[in-house]
Image (cartoon, rainbow, N blue to C red; front, side, top):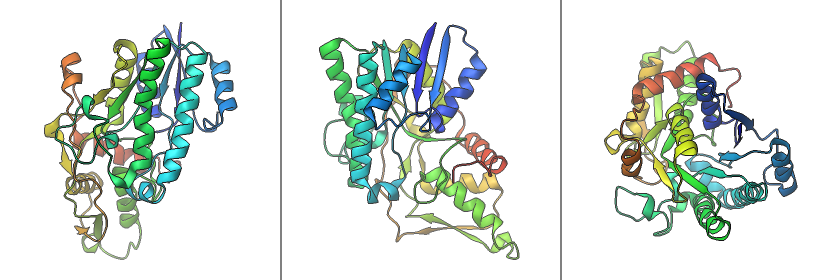
Length: 321
């Protein structure tokens, strides 16, 4: 029996992993999903205690302090310190307990701000990340450095995945903290519900920024399936990008239109150019993934947005907001 510990197991990707695992019903694996209520991973002793309790053979490390553009811009020091603590405690505990494999989750925002596109796995450390989220980015980059260091000294199979922007059910919709898609879902739902005396056709939804920045988005269920494949089949300390294809990149305004369609919103969309855009593009190549898993089918973006919006409406009372 293989026992797998998932840190951050009650968040967006953790919940998606739970859904996929429940559907698979793999008798040879036992999964333990740990959330922040189970353990403070910034506490070294508490982290050791979690590993002593679970006794995992493998770890999927998702736990992190995360947030959207504006939350990052205002809290770079906190993002750096908290994530450094979490990552160091988890990787050291995994080594101390003899875990055979750790798969950590990074982000495409770790890549250099000034770079050539598409970005790939060889370019992670080629220059400074975008100034808006350097704290989070450098903390995540250091996981790759730690993975190599543990491998060089102890032979540990600690690796990492680099997903593009993730969205789906069970996201964090808290204002000023959420990422772009859950943030828009929260604000559009609020706009539709408030002031019912105003016809929806007369309401205007504001897109923060110019709406022009380009992003690749991966549905959380797709990412969960790919991370399980990495855990079971990918045996290299080198990171691997888990992203939709380059041609599936969309603008932020395209995202707003997809969310409006999912809600059936009849009002107008306009851009507030006084708000920051952040990095213009972060186009990632999934060539390495496609070379190893050529036939993987990503969920259609509009369908995934509709599922995410429907989930939010149905679970409004318990959604994180």
